[in-house]
Length: 146
Image 1 (spheres, helix red, strand yellow):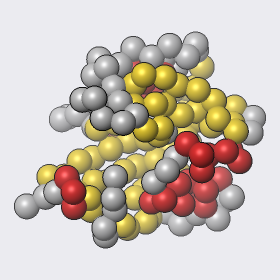
Image 2 (image 1 turned 90 degrees about the horizontal axis):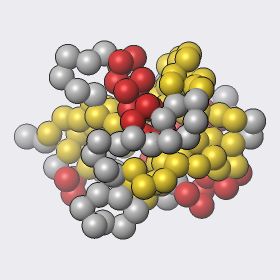
Image 3 (image 1 turned 120 degrees about the vertical axis):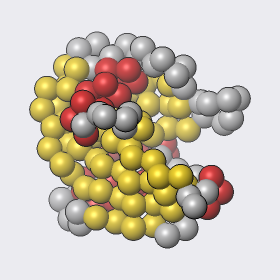
Image 4 (image 1 turned 180 degrees about the vertical axis):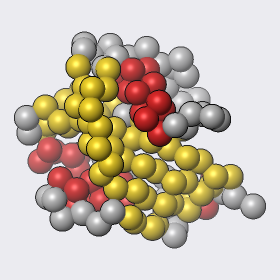
């Protein structure tokens, strides 16, 4: 039986840029992603979003609205994830305070350069759809590779 991970992600815009975080865990190669993470037991989506954004970026979420949901089956980790993406406004200074020590940087990236940072097509595709306002609300990726 695959392990189920419930994940929340924030999409934060600043003009024509999006906020990305650079993650590195256990000496693995670092990867860029949108800020977010695993929902803790007993935590609501809203609470998890606010906590993850504060930890990974130092920003406080002011408003948020559901953008879309992805469901992923990641065979290499024997994992099943449900990822809820929210469009957010946030304030504060970029200053990560990640207790997991996985976030090594965060920065604003021009939308047209997202493909240079977000290398996973199953993450980039739905995000690009959303940014073009052509998104569906739900995506399933049966064999996602991470």
